[in-house]
Amino acid sequence: MKVKLGSLPYVYPIPITLVGANVDGKPNFETIGDTGLMGINPPLVFVSSHRDHYTNIGILANRTFSINFPTTAMLTRVDYCGTVSGREVDKAALFEVFYGETGSAPMIAECPVNLECRLLEEFSFQHRQVFIGELVQCFASPEYVSEQDGRPRLADLTRLDPILYALDNHYYSVGAILGEGYQEAVKWEGKAP
Amino acid sequence: MKVKLGSLPYVYPIPITLVGANVDGKPNFETIGDTGLMGINPPLVFVSSHRDHYTNIGILANRTFSINFPTTAMLTRVDYCGTVSGREVDKAALFEVFYGETGSAPMIAECPVNLECRLLEEFSFQHRQVFIGELVQCFASPEYVSEQDGRPRLADLTRLDPILYALDNHYYSVGAILGEGYQEAVKWEGKAP
Image 1 (cartoon, rainbow over the protein chains, first blue to last red):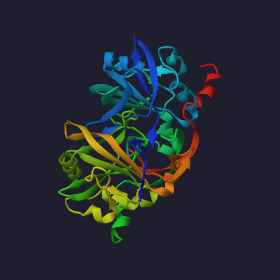
Image 2 (cartoon, rainbow over the protein chains, first blue to last red):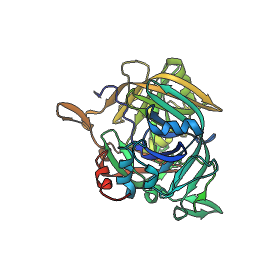
Image 3 (cartoon, chains in turn purple, cyan):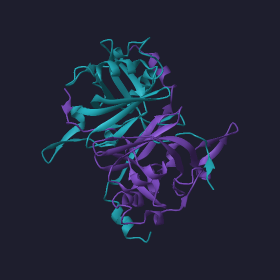
Image 4 (cartoon, chains in turn orange, purple):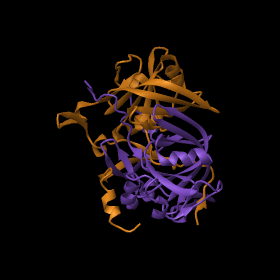
């Protein structure tokens, strides 16, 4: 018999990201876990943010934004970015900022991976604003990229070392590699269901 | 100088879930990583699925679905669910199924946490169908729930032991607890930015 915990949207783990947008021409970064992959082809991602958040202004004005993936070594700075508003604090000063092809989505050099996005759709539910973005470019720090069969390959998550989160209000690290997608099934098919 | 990896939506980590829906009155489960949290209040989640997927038929017909979080011990079965279609295989036979308040969103007893959702919105981008759901009820297996200050509290992720995924096509486990949300910032504020 299961226990009922009420209308708690206990999705886990939640990826901790820094979402970037230029607000009034100045880079701002918001710590966001309400983000995710919506599809690989077409390449779609989303960010959901309370409508009062400062970053939203920039996303709507430029119709571009970025999603930056910090490492666990950046945890205190990332947590700090989630406790203060860009209205009061110059968050651009916390990071080395660079721009990509759109010229208006600020990205964080210290993050191993940065997704530059163009706003495709925006919709609201109550006080939530959901931004759906199409990938323009994926940037990676060279120390996390190797070559495999003549193509660039990103390091695995044990090296990218992202920050995870759960609704128990804890941050977590990634553990070990367990297996390969579409390769583990073989071990199951051998057994009776 | 960053390396450009093209329009790769490298969000990480991706939570591996089993999305449930009744199709023609029979439970079906699809392995999905394109899912996430869209907000806590109101409690919103989403699932994105290729329009040809069998599960979509059930989500649209009943306007309910579930998101089930497997443990790493279920990896082979979960990977298997992602390699076959409910059109050919009776996936209900792979799990012990239960229902909640809506009566039409099948859930998996073996998964520590199950989210029962009501479809709020559906929209399409090219061949993608995105389903936004409102949480109806969060179910948890009793062995993962303890009482704290008179309220039920879910075990942390090291015990819930979810399966993570990344676009390098590897599955991963969760590592260690790193800290507490909104508590790590103090350590940063002491330093010059």
